[in-house]
Picture 1 (cartoon, rainbow, N blue to C red):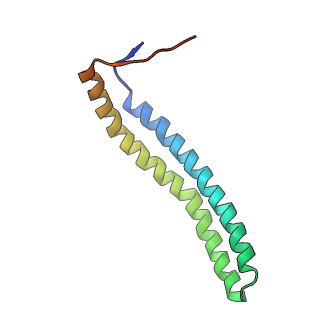
Picture 2: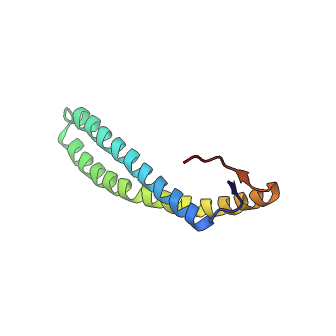
Length: 102
């Protein structure tokens, strides 16, 4: 089988969704483990530290929800350009040989 062309929008949708999901999972893990670490270390601090921790949690939740969306959109835009260049390279090189099995 020879690939002669890739649908830029389809490729961009696939990579953007994948990037957003992976980014969300990674940030969620960082947020959870970072929150545990700050909770353990901050428990010994003064009362003002707990107020700071509360505002950090709000920022962290917003960060975990917004950053994957931003990464997904940026990945979609970059992948459109990548797919267009990829299609041009496929055209110039005569296609990409792909071996498949059933």
